[in-house]
Amino acid sequence: MIIRRLTADDLADWRDIRLEALQRLPEAFLTTYAEERQKKDADVSRMLDQGCVLGAYSDRDLAAVLSLDPETRTALAHRAWINAVYVRPDWQGSGAAHQLLNAAIIQAKVRGIVQLELYVACDNPHAIRFYERAGFVLAGRMPGAVRLADRYQDDLHYVLKIDA
Image 1: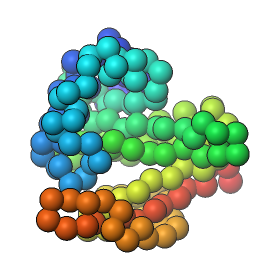
Image 2 (image 1 turned 30 degrees about the vertical axis):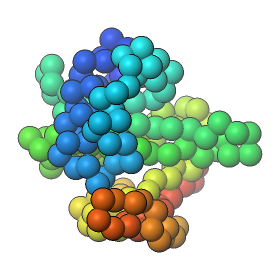
Image 3 (image 1 turned 90 degrees about the vertical axis):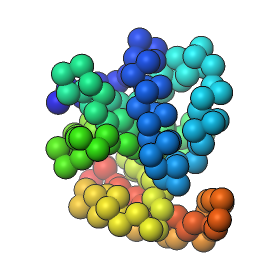
């Protein structure tokens, strides 16, 4: 598995895996499939070049992705968010998610970030176990954080201190 930062050159790979994730697990992401399809290639390419989207490649196949999104305001610049995590079914259990998370931690440290945060749906025990095994600590619960088609979903807020 090769872990690397995605760029505009990876637009087709990113679009493919992102749309797959939104189609397969619509309740796991805040963006809908329809919203993602409407994004212009130029905007997505800019996001890839300016952001920190990490990809796990197995040969030529993009197996998994994770986005590291640093806070930009001075008072919050010590923090970053882990977002848009998705592992394709064939690579679940392969260690790709762990490798991506480790790469994100390294990237965060290089940028002077000392605290990683994320939200995870309270009804996603697989993801919760993954993050807790990685050392994330539950910081709180956001009731009704996400409005789904038929209900509201609570999210759990997790934090990982990486400066220790």
